[in-house]
Image (cartoon, rainbow, N blue to C red; front, side, top):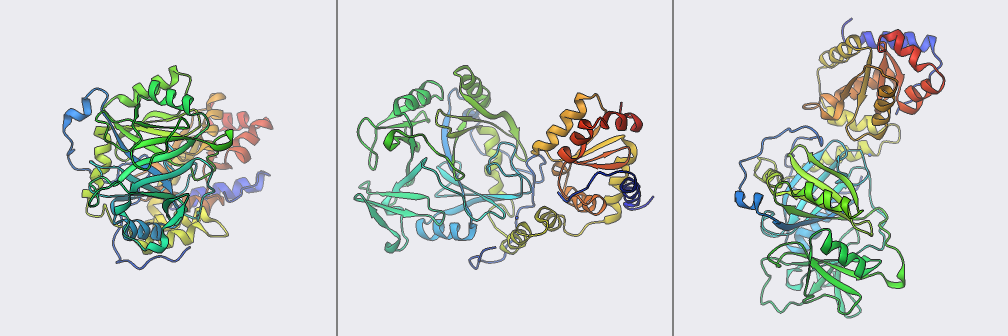
Length: 479
């Protein structure tokens, strides 16, 4: 059968002989900017652009205990307003901008599986100075803030925005980003803006001595002198990760009232560059100390950086990434479109992500663009005809994982097609065509014996509970 006819017929046959129900599984004004092109959408599994030869000195990759504070991660709602704040208020610039079609395997964008973007901003060069990582999840305007993040301290001379935006609290001067993140403007006595205006990141902790011990004994930090803008007294401590003692530090401040740290949804993440192989060692050290390793060690695509994500006693997330791999990330800036944002394209994605009917399908349509329907349907027909069980899945999808685990548990043979790990835009086109056939735009989307049976909870799990899964698998030749 040509096109998706084979799948369509199989679906029609199933709907006449089965009572299973098939259910279909993200705008804000933007600042006027020149229309520019964007990096091609990429997943967190497939490399879609070449990177230049590493620019770092190789000795840094293998120097024992090499550490360099890289950036703090913020989740932002309106990227255009946020960039205007940093560019016009602080004189920062975009180091690099990337778009991703699905959630990060290491939850770089938070616990969200949809399309998102990453924009690195700062002063100077990213491979030499501290930066900010702005993650923007399409369809989400804001994130509930907790009591964790206090502020980032910067040299006061770095602020060049309107004086009206500066607010005085307890004798200190602050400015806030559009998402409410605070910046403490510190008079360091410098005659001009220093080469590194970032001073430190200040966070609340529930128990300063406990946190200090963990950072020093487990994560390898050292206690640093406070300096301008820092809190004083026994209720706070400054720690740093770099060997030279000149990098951006973390200020740990006792949470007032003896309460617990609440990260809510806006929680950030602190990233540190290490020598090659160090993420493995950091992960092992955290495990030995009884700490939490949240992700990894693993290599993230498309750039191949090795990372481990660990948590401190208060649940703050720390990313340790190897220097060689992170150089590949930084080199995105050297691509033809590595520092630009296509605002009209983002607008289309925002509209799709906010669809009231089926946002995931509408996003898939935008990402798929124009495609060869006959070729895509031929791919779908081929998979379903060649394999007794086909699981159309996504790398970061927890229900896909559960479906595969259940099929493995009963001993079934099955083929997995990770749509977010496919080259180009084929994965999105496949989602669109699958929706036409099955009425499902979500994953997992499972076929047994050439017929769609739903996803996990409304598909294989339901069949298994009713004692129908194993017979169906046997009939299809999967057992």
